Image 1: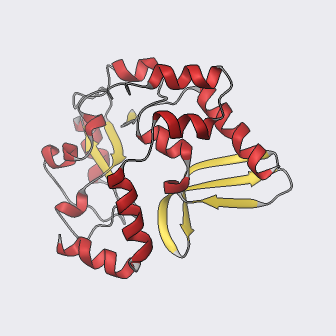
Image 2: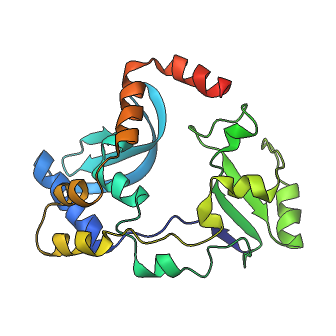
Length: 215
């Protein structure tokens, strides 16, 4: 049985190394374990995009993804490997029996599902894959058209387009610019994103969930 994952892209090792160096300078501690998009609760709210750090002395720190420069650079595609922008597998014509991904946007079609805490997308590409999926037990499942599955999941349709400042960003890192400074310079936070974050901080989470359900 073969299974593939819908991939946003793989960041360069240079970017990650510079990012970790910056965190270790900031906290004055060596990082021995790092989890991207840890399923942790941040400020009492479920957040599947939290960053979890474990230091050499055993201490742990959880960082909200919206405050993390590496997460921002990842989402904006500024540090992905060159091969990611020409990926032959970023298409609905899969080569595996089963494809697994996040079902982004599922709440637009069924509000009983919560994409914040995580809802998986499973696509059976072959008869063998379908037989396996049909035999799943103790799993809540609903069937949707492939058009709905791909509406908010562009990585299932085509490769990511390169960020126009990618080369400048990587060159700056190679020349010694701190990671956070390079991200702020070449992948700044948009006004729309800043506004959304302000609203989230001001409004109670319960009210935000109600507004989402109304939409």
